[in-house]
Image (cartoon, rainbow, N blue to C red; front, side, top):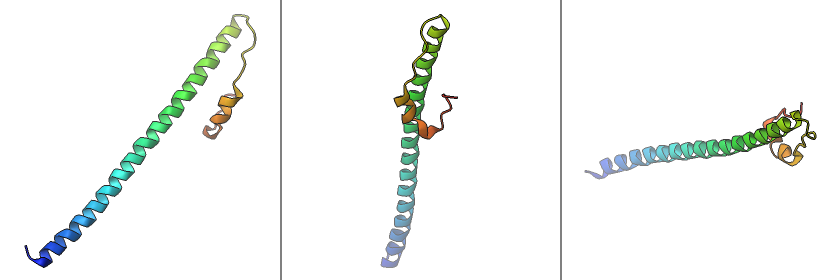
Length: 84
């Protein structure tokens, strides 16, 4: 391989490598985002389950369910309408 061919191959490999690294970073960011979203959804599911348990207890004639305002404030960025 001549010097010119080596330079061309090196340039092409650099461009291909840069694109590959970019794609890998993008894919990793997507996976990380999905994991965070899943974690948030699991937290919300737990809140809903707890609240429904309290509502069920209330339907049996026990005291009115207490709401955990701390948890709702943590997820206020999700646009929750649980209070309405």
